[in-house]
Amino acid sequence: MDFDKLETVMRRLALEAGELIMDIYNSADFEVRAKSDDSPVTAADETADAHISAGLAEAFPDILIVTEEQAGTHGKSSENFLIVDPLDGTKEFVQRRGDFTVNIAYVESGVPVRGVVYAPAKDRLFYTTASGETVEETAPFDWNVKGETVPVSVSRPDNSALMVVASKSHRDAATDAYIAKYDVADMKSAGSSLKLCLVATGEADIYPRLGRTMEWDTAAGQAVLMGAGGKTVRFDTHEPLVYGKPGYENPFFIAYAPGVDLKPA
Image (cartoon, rainbow, N blue to C red):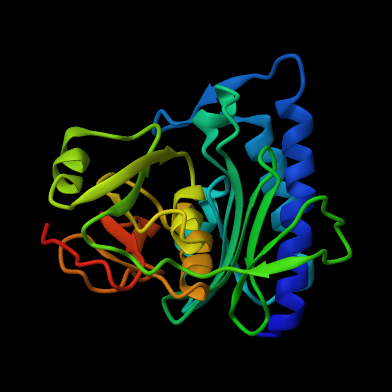
């Protein structure tokens, strides 16, 4: 893989898709439909998916592309693939809460080694550079010219006063019971893959997810977190969370800054 080209293409496509999404987000009204699993989908999901997929296919014609909105591609398999969630946090989008993201990642031998996460309503753009380090670019953004960036790094956690981030739309009693095993100084809620990015930037120390997610929900965020020095592991065994699994479904997981004293499931 040409990582310089990958960085440029993923960043540009995420920004372009973000503009398409915001055009619909800022419209007077938009249709919300239910998919076969009862999750919501809008024209923003589908428009962004089509744009990103076409751009990736043109730039990397020999690489498998897996996207949330094109389930028909998921019968194929490959050790190395691009994976896309064009609009993570559709519920946040529908409720106009702003916590939604565009996600593109490249998986190599089961590991999301590069990724971009763009939150267009919040003007936050995170991505891994060609060399694998994570940066956050400062708005305003130009599709074709990289702006000012700052390196992103995880926190040095204090286990007597941890900062926890949890899901805004999927919080449950099991998650609260697990969080209660830690000494928590503060807890915040966020939607979509922004939670992984908040651990990457040091705004949170740990993010436990005891709920269903798919690989396209997490790959880009995990790449961003890894590039900032963080880790994502299975909730049950604390082994690394890997990609390319049958059906692309994740187990429960924990994303955290090294130094957090992980508690057993």
